Length: 355
Image 1 (cartoon, rainbow, N blue to C red):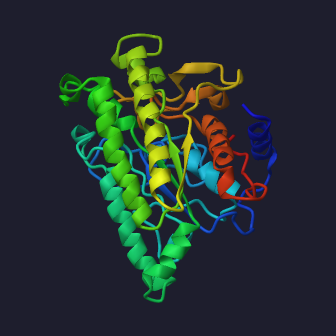
Image 2: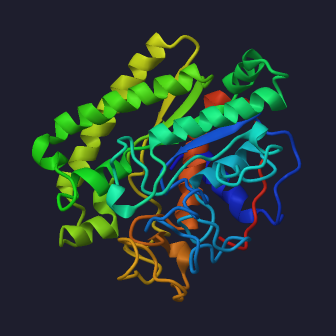
Image 3: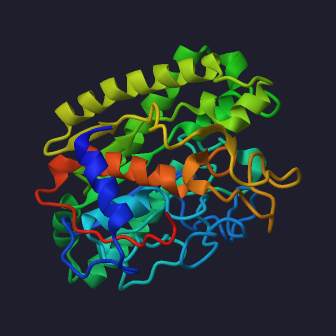
């Protein structure tokens, strides 16, 4: 952990304000694409097992359960605060027209690069659909700030930060789920990674065509170390086969991002490494904080059960997703990685009631 990240976390922990700082954000807008690690309510009204709009989710969040797969804030909430936004970036499902100028969160639990990923779980907003939703937002912006001119809107979007986090579910809820999907019998891990990265590159190119220029691309996480995947593989240690496949995907993705940056004029792609570890303060690394349901989706919290007390010591909130404390670290790391997209000190102020 760098000294810069430590300083950001110290600022978060020492802040006493219960609202955001009233200041001009470091960038005019922030758009978010991804899966349940970033979702803040887009799945709430879908028919799906990938939902988190019930207690004990949100136990440490001011508004309670909102659809975030966490006890409190998620990674992009932390990034938004550090960037100085007065409010969290709203989910596409409920964003008002007066909010979308500063950004929209399109992320959806169980979403993947491939349309069919996680179809066994029900409704989800895959990456292709998230791009369609962004196109809808752009049409709204043409009326709101463009005075009918898409060129003016594109100038606005050129200045925004876009973070994208995809790929996790294409392994969790596709390749390594042979009960529902044949991809692991049809393709080697290398072949599958090539298929994913080829499709992902097309999707990012589409985002560029819509006006995005500043891309922060999260690498897929080491999901072989999640309690859910260790349980699925009947082991109490990280699953090397899963993490090995993730490494192949991330390696190919880095190469693809370099290629995109060289071909797409004015673009900048920053690869955000997945976390490899945390400080010793997190002394529970392989168990979830909440009691896990046996009837809802895999690895999710059982409704209305009392979670652990020492949440600040846990990496995992449920069997897939980090606690708010872990997200504070990951959010600060993400903010640091995006530093070339902004030029001043962090603007955000942070509530400490959830830490």
